Amino acid sequence: MTTYIIRRLIQALVVLIMVTLLIFFIMRLLPGDPLLIYLAQSAELEAMPPEMLDQLRHQFGLDRPLMVQYFTWIGGVLRGDFGTSIFYHHDVGALMAQRFPVTLHLGLLALFFGATFGILAGLAAAVRRGKWLDRIITPLTYIGITIPVFWLGILLIYLFGLKLHWLPIAGYTSPLENFWLSTRQVIMPVVCLAVFGLAANARQMRSAMLEVIRQDYVRTAWSKGLSERRIIIKHAMKNSLIPVITLMGIGVGIIFGGSVLVETVFAIPGVGRLLVSSIFAQDYVVVQAITFVIAVIVLTVNLIVDISYGWFDPRIRYG
Amino acid sequence: MVIARNITPEFEEAPPRVSEWRRFRRVFLSRGVVIFGLVILLALVFTAVFAGWLAPYDPYKTGTGRALEQPSMTHLLGTDTLGRDTLSRLIYGSRTALMVGFISVAVASICGVSLGLSAGYFGGIANIIIMRGMDALISFPMILLALVVAAVLGGGIQNVIIALSIATIPGYGRVTCGLTLSLRENDYVLAQHAIGASNLRTMLRHILPNAFPPLIVLMTMQLGNLILAEAGLSFLGIGIEPPGAAWGAMVNDGYKYLARNPVLSFAPGLAIMLVVFAFNMVGDGLRDALDPRLRGLL
Image (cartoon, rainbow over all chains, first blue to last red; front, side, top):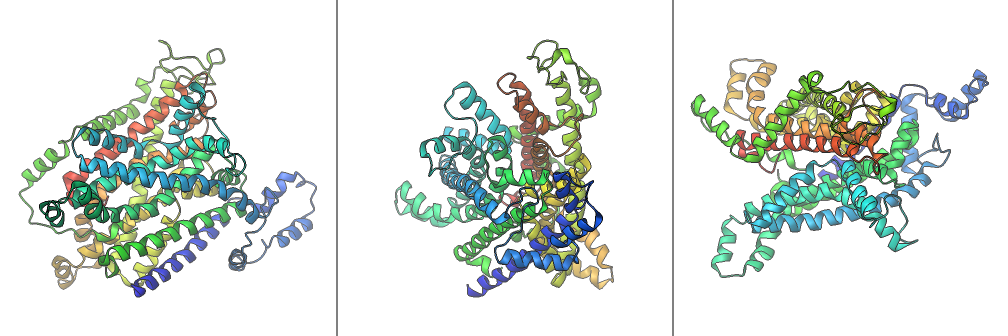
């Protein structure tokens, strides 16, 4: 097990280095000079003498060789310094510290509800295979993995916001500030973010469960006269959860991807919306920092998933 | 992420060709929902090809006097802010969706399959570099990666295609690499080495054809995902230039007038969902018909 963990850690480190290279060089392919974009906003470009341009370029370190710039960036990131936003003229670390909690608040809720209800729905569908419960759940899971999240958001806003007036149609309030308002505002975005994971978990759980309940040891449990409840919970569920765990790693990525769209629909000041606005503002410092942090989170979750997977299923360790 | 790692196809002796095709057809068409998906896809292709005849109005023609009209007999789905007929734009939008889907799948599968094939076949350092590179790509959520790449390249439909292709390469790479790793252990590969066949020939003529079934399933499902991602990008305002019609952008345009004319947003969203659903169902059907052992893996 230790060798497996060490091997996975080294692998993750290599991937992480590749991620940084990828982000850095993709961002440097940006058409146009980031400096000119920066200056264009202050509209002093015309009046600026070339010497001053060079001086500014030097100040931002943009005149140095790419490799030097890369290592400067990495060095900064390792010290927790993500640079200064070109657009907001703000420390990017501080900017992210403002926005990430919002996205994490929504994302963690979505992950939790997606996993819990997904597993329960899949379990119910498998145990009652072919019965009315299964015939309701299974088609719903198909819809869940195909519905565009931004469109679902709009449907919810129309129904619960505009027609029924049950929920506020947009915005975000910190739960520490006003818990009741915050919860009401968060319901629809969380549903949007959770729906894909919920459906995917349910599908995976259903097929894994159907696989497991055909196994000999489950038949043995039946023939011992154990109750259905006991067989499902104690015997079958444990093994069918293993493939569902892998989905958690993918789920985190899906939620970050979805947050870009959902935060735009619901006007939520999270990191997804910051990313979109920075992309339109061509603020490469912010884009590079956000993509890096998201990639690190996704990588870490996948590492944990892989290690726990190896722990649950010894066949993986030696594979 | 262990999905692609455990694919170990064991090939039985091939039954006669005719019955194979019949068996395929029987399994493929055995589920109603797959047939439903197939019908939607055929309708979609038909719509895209004959958009010019099917659309009741010019999708680009604006009219100041008839902006934001409610659905009526003259404009079945109403008109948008610029007075353009929503139904006609919806019909033309199918071209955007299909074009982005098909070209991206073609580009991504060619790149991904060749990378995965080389990584699996040569192993060693090539495998490590290629597959870790794929892992790096996959650690970005697909739509984020596409968003960043599209932003770097600038707007326009061709850049969205490039961005989505790059974002979906790892899927093909992983599956192909996993398959190649097990397929290269076969005796017929050894036989190829013995008669002095080149590596390229062995890879293309002997390993690749055996990896086809899962790849076809993957491509079908990716078509749905790509159309979904394209819709997401165009919803955010990245993609086809303004006069052109894209479903995601239409949802966004209509969103501003949700209270007044909800059809503007509802109709294109429904179209996206139906098409993605159809590709998923047909992919499911193909998987069951081509290789049921892939259940749960793809």
